[in-house]
Length: 223
Image 1: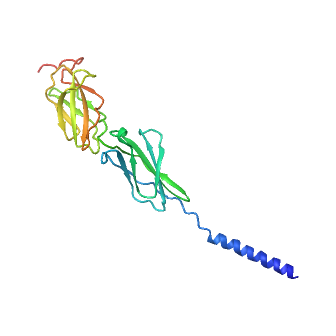
Image 2: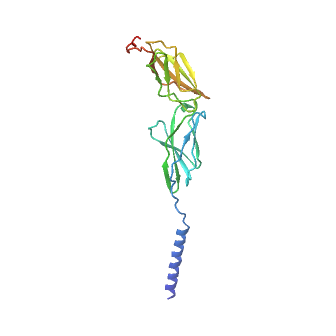
Image 3: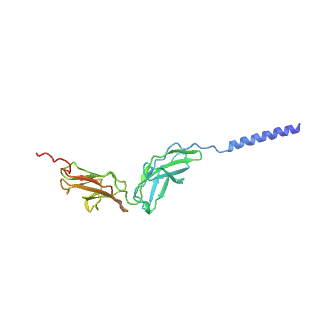
């Protein structure tokens, strides 16, 4: 009889202990529900790119991913408990764009990954989308996409696409310039480079322009 009582008591104590363990076991947190809103520095640091984002609710760590082109594969490069990160790209990787995405995580899992943010270290990357006009009679207008962090642009000119571009057409702070010295009927090639506190970046891809009547275009009617 006593054996049965002791066995019952032992079983009750074991059940109570197991229930206590379940009660004391910490609950698994819900993963973060939102993606970080990431910003990347543009030439603020000589050999590094700084990333910042507002804190995400329930996040304990953040994983940082990087790609070297917009449609490239994002590889993890670091993890931090803070809402900022500094990517030391080094002196051999300045003046070029990098794309970043960040994901907030906790022991329960990770939330959605952020939208891409791009940044660069050192001098500005080469300007893109350079366009020289071919529809004017009073000069050639050159435009390009602005670069964040750039303080000045230089526009160079050459008669040959693969030339040295020795003629400085303009030095401007905006993203357009006019070549008022171009002569009608000739093709000119233009390249643009940007500058910030670290110096000038690489030259853009060249683009041709001309003053009417352009080579291969009919002359304007008299009148």
